Image 1 (cartoon, rainbow, N blue to C red):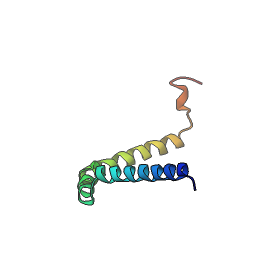
Image 2: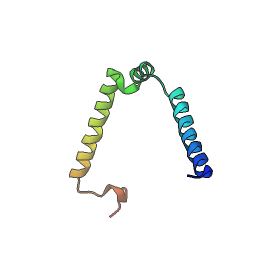
Image 3: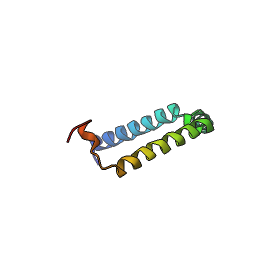
Image 4: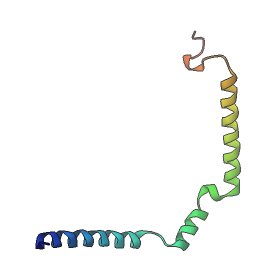
Length: 79
């Protein structure tokens, strides 16, 4: 093994180690991650209820559109 290969391998290993070290420093800990999840809008029961209602309305609209014979993409009065 030449010196050049040894230096290149050492440099790559050092770069990977530095990247991992920086990642571990900036990533949140488990406790901070749980706190962030609790503050997400989807975690609130009120927000979840609103999301369910909105999804149900969208699904109802899609069902009505699927049962309709008109092509709504042509616009009003277009044939």
